[in-house]
Length: 172
Ligand code: S3P
Image (cartoon, protein in one colour):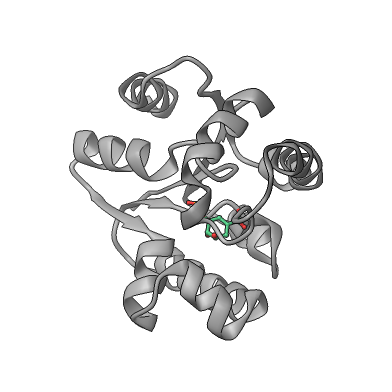
């Protein structure tokens, strides 16, 4: 039984890469955000707007715990904030868990988030200047948690396929 957990900032490609890794390993893939959206019957943006961030973080913690306790081998894509709240980073250090920090540079994150900010309540409505500043500070605050992952994998300039291959090699 193995748990492969992908962590990292918003828009680094955790879900896309996770699906490829799971397919190659012939094990199931779980996306925490997708599960929360299904359980609540709301999008992530609606959960933030209707119930607030703390409510979301509680659901995120319970969802992470539930899947880490699942008896099957799984690839789990977390949300960008998952390791940074509750005691989630401690849960991620548990037995049988191999975690990967998908690491992107600030300019790459900025480019990706500019085009996808409406799906992500933490960056929705920011000007380009605000977004740049926000990412730099937020990533700095979160780095401590991301760097507790078993492995770091840089994603800049790589396809999701290439990132997945790197993860598979690190698992061998
Ligand atoms: C968040 C990242 C999002 C989602 C929520 C909060 C964060 O997931 O969980 O909007 O705190 O960084 P992605 O990393 O998939 O964008």
